[in-house]
Image 1 (cartoon, rainbow, N blue to C red):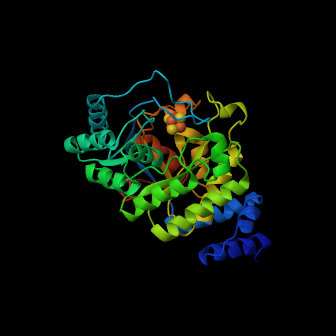
Image 2: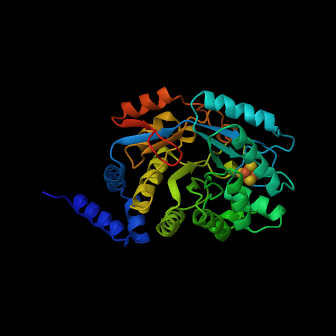
Image 3: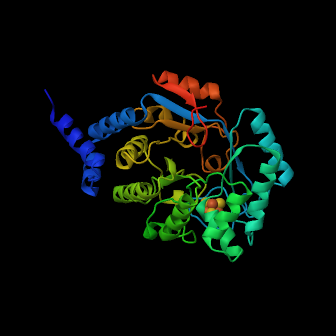
Length: 354
Ligand code: SF4
């Protein structure tokens, strides 16, 4: 016999399929935890089955000097480091020796850096190594374009020509201008984030999509953000995955008034992402470096099918209190995934199974 939960679950899945899922549906399920996790797990199973993926990658944060003033940032320093090209190349070489297929490059906003600076970095790595370059947030693209007096499309064209393969959809934080004015007043607006992301997609540059949650936002902001990502994906199909990023409250100003999400908030966010992005965004990723390995494993029962990358080096979360270290080995991923009863698979950045 079908229970009320079964019927509600079937209704919501049907509405998601028919593109009729509403904000009211979303707010209803987010308060019904059992239903939320049940639907998310069913949809994960329908879309990707039992395979859980990860990528061997290396993060390179080329500088921690930044003219930005995001209140959640624990990473930037006034007198910080700027890596030389030789140092970057050395890190890439080390990563490739460990099997990396992706190099993720992001950094602070250096005063006055033009497009040439970013293009030279990409071009130099590409001229030495055949590796996927996943680089520069929409904020960095905006910064480079502005300092070079070119529009976003021309900036992206130059970056792509220099070797940019895909972009992190970071700097999204919460896609709500009122919240942005409070937590990152000098960051690009919602409209600018959308413009850079959709221009990249139109030009054949895939991106990820993110949300940074667990601070001063409300559940309504979660829902609006996810429905916005859903609508972009419907039009462009350019997002490879959605990555919820939990706010880390240590060593930053925002942490003085916000404590970060609870474990339950974290699980709910991942489950809601799976449901509201269905069927358009195939992959929902959990960030092991932010959640910790144990909670990242739990998200596999709440809609998640990807655990991100090995990283090898990680400064942003570590500065804000992350205690998970900077590297998870392929063996570590395999063990964690198998322990959850799932099938581990190594993938490329664009989700080809390696
Ligand atoms: S989050 Fe990024 S842009 Fe903002 S202050 Fe930190 S390094 Fe700068």
